[in-house]
Image 1 (spheres, rainbow, N blue to C red):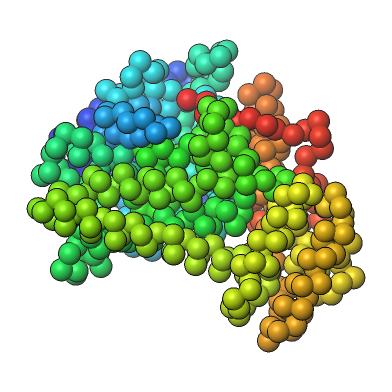
Image 2 (tube, rainbow, N blue to C red; image 1 turned 180 degrees about the horizontal axis):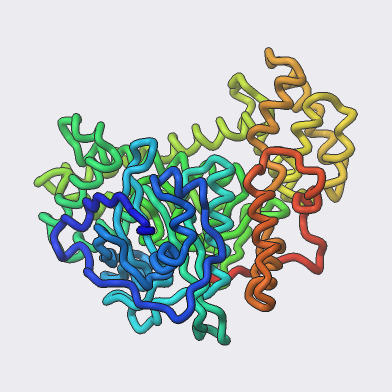
Length: 492
């Protein structure tokens, strides 16, 4: 039975300098690890056929489906602040685009599908560990309610890849609103290809921000909307303790989605200086630096767009600066609104940011677990009899006690009853996140023993992050000292 992909490939209709056409490299013995059946149905794909031999051949790169137009996209980027004029998809191939059941256009891309003209001496392959990490974390992010790329499938290749050691190879099928990045605009700006810039900007407006086309300054409107989307996204990262790890401009989606889960991680004990990525040796992409880096990346986008903003350089710069100046206000508004929700505050008062900041300061000084503190506050909001569970997370419980007096005074000014408040807080304060030690244990079982049961169980638990799951309560617990993970690796 033929696997039908209802492709309608708009990016592949752009000029040839936007990408390289090629087919995925075949693999020896593909084996399906997991298929995201719900997502397949959302994409108008038949999950039973996709899980069959022909579907697995497609998901591994051994067969190109009808109507696919496989391409590797060109882009540039700043990597740890250093500009590289040509990067591009070095191990990923975009098969094509489908319009899902909600009417949204989605890219379907293979990661680990072999070398491309942009591989830069790389093998174009992916190891099993990073594939499982991206599958699990991207699906967890979706369940948490954040804009993110999704994982459709993970397939073993039957081959090994050489990294620090020999590792099993795998291919991830990734789904995204698009794969256009800040670095895509930088690619054309670096070449002074204004026509290419304009074609790309017009494409992004049509696909992601159609309301910008109605503006008398559509490219300024585009920049405004990307700034707003990124401000909101990064605020939401901070609300769940997420650290992207490598916020290079080529890892920043124009669509406002979280993309490229390399050495990403979730914080355990709260500390704004937390860094996990092994390659971020100076803390450029630390948890607390993410808003600043988001603005830095957006400034690079604005620079690339200057020729489209105005023919007058001075006016173009003024337009760009005006758009960028809005970032801080939009971020702060989104960030503080989210913190109010996490604290059970449905109304807004001037002292709320200080109340939230003082809690975070006490958490940092007392090594309190970020996720558990807010989750247990949800119960404490119903009454002080639940305080003990929160106090126990602090080295000095008196630090919590002093803050809780002020918090309860503030809650007394709110209109909702305790049960309503508790339910609202539990809906935004997850019990379960992809704890780093759990992710590493899952990867180890798969890589060393071909055991995917921990992956399946962890994925199941994370699919309902806001629900109590008594049988899996241990997944909510922070690591013991000997379980702590201090570094994550890109794995490419």
